[in-house]
Image (cartoon, rainbow, N blue to C red; front, side):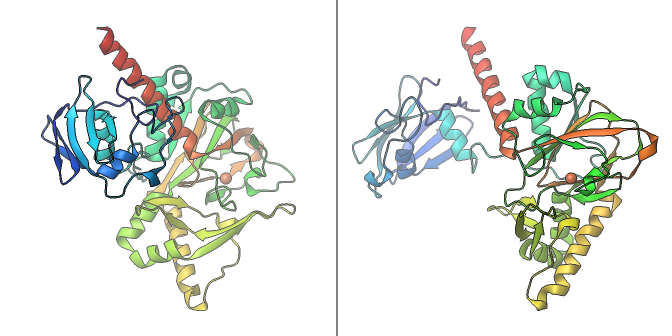
Length: 396
Ligand SMILES: [Fe+2]
């Protein structure tokens, strides 16, 4: 717990100590030793007061009703106290103490604990998934942190030498967070079946796709764990949909425009399910970032757009599919028993080469999670590491 309260349970540090703090037109200017300075709005500061009147000290949830704070509130004075807090007296008579590390983080970043930025990859920049030793990742938080960071940046991760027992994929998934259940089995077996209800359960080649674009909230993470693989063929194919989107945005803006605006519907074809959702192939986030790729060509519904858009819509779809087949965007690698591959199912499109059923056995187990769980686990490990390093410094 911080000696200086923050409106959360987190540990915050500054890269540089506070040099001084001053008031300009009722706003608070904090100047740091490294020469940087940040201006804080008085209403924003008042909103984030962490005193016991404004914040429940146990839950760290707000008690303050923000409507009680006058909109024209100003900071009247600012000082540093003995513990290093930035102490502000407001025109509504309230006094608040702010943790410098918390202030620095929230001023420096548009969203203090934002997801990590994506690193788009192509065949030339990433020939196989970023790989880590599975048992080490499971027993050493530092390795797991490195692995989850690589996952968040690249949308794909491989843990090698995992046990080849059934159910390993579920226990691994649960170490990150709750399983996302769907109309498929909680843990699904990717083997070829005589009465397959999905192309995945045949030995045919599978073109790149995301799973379950038929759901409004398409599962953010898919994990495939290889128990057995002695067949000829069946290599995994992964395609960074964000890399294709970026390529189109930069080089073919008319195609990109259609991909981000025209909605396609996907529906599950199984008789007793009614899952269906309609959205653009490339969905953008609020800051103009790529949020989701939603495309499984084999479960697309008939296009329903104004007739003037039909040509352009098909042209854009075909261009995206062409680039998915372009070797520059394809990562192709074999599955070895014990490999566990986790990928962002709303970014990285997966497929496989056909395999020869008579050449051996191939058995993968799969499961879905939400993106949130991988990010949350990374943040929890970061906080634990930070707490450890602070207590080590204090012990010296
Ligand atoms: Fe799939």
